[in-house]
Length: 140
Image (cartoon, rainbow, N blue to C red):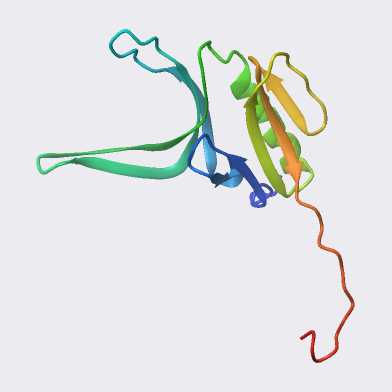
């Protein structure tokens, strides 16, 4: 496989915008801690190939950068594998577009959609630009 096959595929995050898919090195689901009478939630994150640091004068912690794709009340069983499978399929066809993430009532899969654990990953390809053969001076 071409190492840059996912350079033109972007993953929509929960609140941070878009992340280029070739930067993803991991997919994780984990629960959050419930705070004061609030239940815990599950987060589905992608892990990026960039580390971040934080700390204080006596110590510095470096960890991988996580971006949340979706928050759900129930464990997203199989969602990590479904996203990995879709990324692998898109890598094989050298795709260009955006993967949207959403909660659904039932799981469906096709050429550009993968779902599991009531989470759907849908690939929306970019449309090719309309070729205009104008070469006159006013166009250039």
